[in-house]
Length: 259
Length: 307
Image (tube, rainbow over all chains, first blue to last red; front, side, top):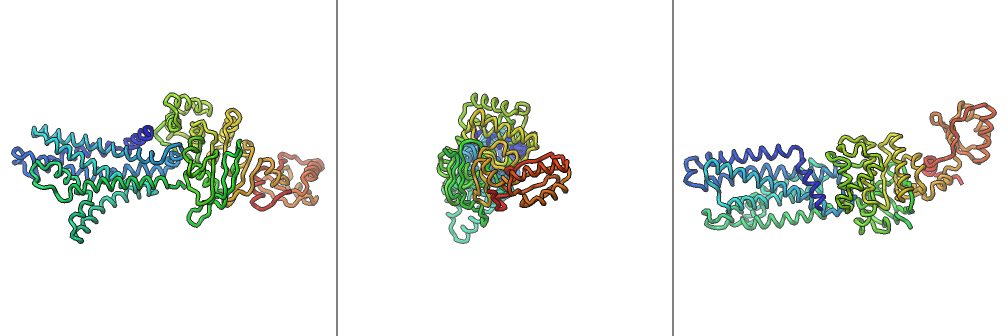
């Protein structure tokens, strides 16, 4: 298992120019949190209201991590290390060695998840440090933790969806595009159903709300008066659904035939 | 003891019936699994290693069931798939160490074992180069090396010579022979390139349309299906063919390029007659060879049996 994890981590790190993803992300995050703070919330009030800057960090995090990094790059990397291995034939070699297929799956999943967590951790840290340097203020620890945990859970969810699709698909591009399509359509479909059926609680099934909502939930002290209806549900649903998708991926890979 | 046994093995791909009740028995030694393209060789091998699930029947390797005990089988065998793929950015030696560790060897033992295999198979010169720069022949040798990393009781090779030039083929077959003689490794080799296979195999199984048509010792199969087949190359083929046809000792004569293929009625009488024609007409005889595995396969598939 350790061996496989090492091999997969290497593949993730060697993913075509991973640094081209990480460095611009870092830069955009830092710049965007500043722009949001000044533009959307008004530069004058920053000194008086630390929450404005905190909110800017949250918004930047949503715009950077939720969409481009998490929803676009994770499916691409997972498709590369699972479906592309089917296509290249290296997966056939791997399953012919004395290794359990579930170990292969867990190692691939864990390697992508851990790299995305590391990327998120250091990028957030960099953003916070830049804010500190410019404004001499640090966001409360609870907010930082909330941001990291919620984005981490989101990564877990996205990794699971992408892993399931990548284990089913036979072509890398199809796997990456299908994962992307599912992840983009998912919240839209949930929103439509929730609105049409007039069931606001159904929104808990949409993963997009979980980042700000978990932050809301964990940072009530920052001025929120009540827990948003869907916050906890959304987070729990994400964890449950992600675990279920991972379980399904394991079944799919165990039954996979290498023609 | 049979190291591989299948019983009424079936596999379908949509409407295509790849295996149609395959009964294969492989004893210890070097077994040639032969058949034309699409006969079902690769499908059978993939079932044996657990990469495919059978739709019906049963398959056992070293006494273990291929569906329920696949992991135990994979611990005891080595496999070289047709067109093997390796991670490109790693060196051959590092890949072998990785494979050895998957077989449960410690880091030090894996290094030692990999170096020994590399040396034995003549891979030392390029073992530290990244696999990306390997030629087809080097990759095939690396493929054989990775199949040997777990000290297997049985090594399955799927079309191991298909990407190789004649020199590479000779080297690979030499390695197989050596490993069998020195270490007692058993081999199951699938191929449709038969002349070389005949030189290393002691048993053979012929598969066609997903069923085993014949299996047994190589000499017995050749005798049974190609004992009356002769390959001849003479200086004046036309004159030779005329004479041989007039003799009434042959069923049929075909000429393919310089080679004349003859199906004789009575092999001994026919051989004597050929020698007489050569002497009388002062022909130069550069090839006079009795049937081989290739002609046996051809004959078997055409439905002819010689005895």
